[in-house]
Image (cartoon, rainbow over all chains, first blue to last red; front, side, top):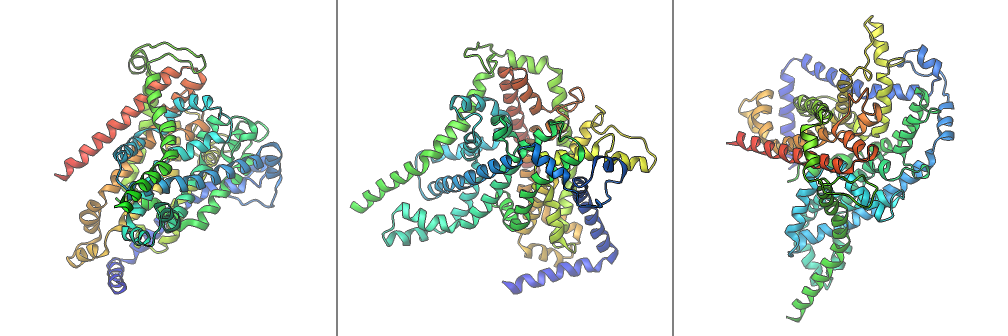
Length: 292
Length: 294
């Protein structure tokens, strides 16, 4: 296997080498340009978060701050619900990741290991789920949430995050199909029940998928503004996203340097997740699209 | 025999216990709202009062024949759609290069995907600063080159281009990663064989790679239709749909119709219209793709 891959890489690089090295430089310049477009807005925001308002007007946005001035951060933390947002976002992330991984693997286990009457209905529901535009169906879900008495509680977003995530079940299905059925059968020979097989064999075996999907879910929940915005309006139910949105509308923090500080605070959790778990994130995104 | 029967009851037990909660959740939070949405679209419900009247197709007639603002909003969605469509060839090309054809591709891959990881509201903050008419970075740059300032977010004829730019900044990386994943899933001997046959990079790409990643291109197109029709947080946070409704998208308008103007019936009808558009688009797209195949 190894030997087979090696020569192919060589031929590819040889192929590009044949062309003038100017092309090589051009390619790198192209990506440096793209990297600049990606990074500059972030860098400018980071710089601005350490500057004062007069400085913003007076000096170039690309000029690094001269001192590590933390006033903006202090103001944002004093005037806004930063820690409340952090706490609520954490609760939402943990609850939806844990519940989701258990429920989704259970459904995927049933869908891939058994034949039953409702199976076709389930698969049809997947199709419907792909087509329904989530943002607008919120209008009719809204009344339901009020009637269930979960409006303006953390339960409302949790129920939505775990209730309708068909994509996760779909990806789990892909992983479960790859585990040979003989694994189940040999466990059964040893007298294991279906429950034991799920809990002791299947669930641990899809742990890599769970890690990937959990990380993707965490990022999705952390970055979602829409659902907490609709369902949790009160200040003590702010998440990081809605807290930042409130900062924009709050005259005390809507100036560029303070808003930049707030934006940097909100950016940090997902960026940390990204740099630590990058591999999982890429493989998860690939799994959703490439595997048929 | 006995054991078989035992297994059967066990299977039933597993199915019931494992599927009970997920099924209830799906029914309650997906199917029921969908049915209710369609039902409410024929009413004049205001979202609060306990009663409402059926008004037949009035909401739909109003949306389709008597709401120039809805069509204007859809046109704005169209700009996001076209912007992303134009970027697909570029994204494909960049992904092709990132597939081991440029030095430092791992680092560039990390950077390309970075914007998608950033909180949408934070992205909106960042670009509000860049686009700001007073101390905005872009206008300062224009001034540096002795050019006139541009009202990036205040000029009705420009605001949608500015916002589409934000959307491109944020989501192009996802498409590139999807394309890249598709490239990497291709067996390497396929390209190898084409190289032996004397195919150059362009031929490799056009004749071998492109036809084989068609499913992923289809997914990206579908995501684009869905995404472009549902754009919400970028305009809602950055301009609130302004100036003077110029940057309102369909979803912003639907949400405002429901929650600001308390016209849930019509908002539900708008949601149904959006759903129909998405379904229509995916059918057309599938037809087009199958046509090419023949």
